Amino acid sequence: MHPILINAVKAARRAGGIITRASQDVGSLKVRSKTYNDFVSEVDHAAEAAILDVLKDAYPTHGFIGEETGNDNIDAENVWIIDPLDGTTNFLHGFPQYSISIALMQQGQLTQAVVYDPNRNDLFTATRGRGAFLNDKRIRVSNRAKLQESIIGTGFPFRDFSHLDTYMGMFKDMVRKTSGLRRPGSAALDLAYVAAGYFDGFWEIGLSKWDIAAGALLIQEAGGIVGDFEGNESWIESGNIVAGNPKVFSQMLQTLAPHLTDSLRSKPV
Ligand code: IPD
Ligand code: CA
Ligand code: CA
Ligand code: CA
Image (tube, rainbow, N blue to C red; front, side, top):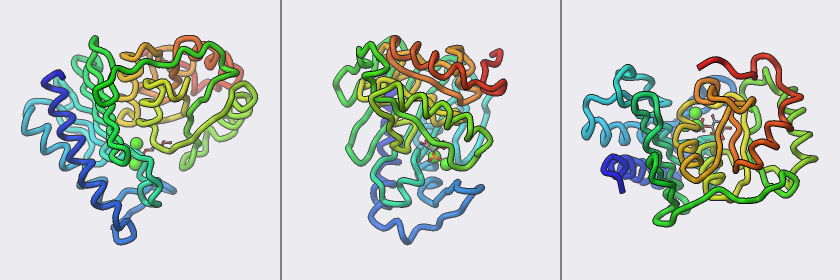
């Protein structure tokens, strides 16, 4: 394993330990709502602190973007992008589908990725140019050729409803044109599932960098494609993301195309 990835894995497993211990008694946690339907608990903060502890100790000159602590030194050549607990709503309900997501961006390019599922002890990792792995096994995207036979992951709008009607239009078409849709509730893990070939594709509107950075590199290293809703590069900035194996990816773009409003189209990067 790449030496930098070893540190990222150590950080993810530490956060996993904190989250798993806390999951025994979620009822007693202090929870705050950031905005409508957007919750954060003391566990999100503790997990992020543990990750930053490991990575800042190993890489004091690097920059950090963390969901809960914000930006630190982000003009550095190396910037870590961290979601300490992806799927907080699931976690707070005891629904065992959430993950830790850590990615490294080096000079604007994603180079290392970890998505860790502490419930299944599934560790998804990738290093640019060296493939994607689940635990010690190499993973590849599925080779399913038809959208009609595919299972597609997605995320429903739940706190910002400005694109809800657009999303429902997309959703109806996807329901008709696929074998089924799934909404597990942790975008980072959903993307890891595309990399592993469990899902043939995924789309969601308006995610954040920390939800998608690690999962996207996993998919690219597993032979899949990641794009915005027109198949271009602006996905990391806009969070409007489509991903899949190459054949399903292009059929998803065709299915989404009639629903695109101006604000969902590609932006220059
Ligand atoms: C959320 C999850 C969810 C997605 C949301 C994200 P959080 O992350 O990834 O699947 O639909 O848009 O915000 O807030 O639980 O880290
Ligand atoms: Ca959150
Ligand atoms: Ca998240
Ligand atoms: Ca989070």
